[in-house]
Length: 175
Image (cartoon, rainbow, N blue to C red; front, top):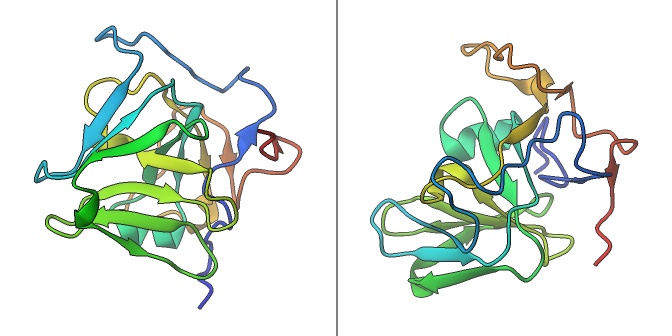
């Protein structure tokens, strides 16, 4: 079943980090890599061995239902840098045929990561699951045409896209 306002890819790569793309490799806590995180019950843990590439807010209906809030804030990992370090046996997945696969802890329900159904090298992590400063800040809002009516979009100066990120702004992965 296709969901209205659901992206085919959760994040697309920007042509370059420039205006509007906020990257902060040494945040207030002085963290860079490895980036660590985990679930609410603490039984599933992960690590990202290189700085996150970018972050964004997604307002599609699937992300609203997956997170239980107005949008998801997710950060893209560089291919091959994400690893589950503890509790992999506790992961379950929601695998819609038309979207990213969402992996979560079956003990506490926390979102752990999402993996592209088209290219499994592409993995993003929910920013709320990261311990400390993730080193990136959301740089845009996508699928704002489907934004929750009960929470107005903030006036944060970030670019907004009614649907996904336009192809003129993004490039395909080239690893």
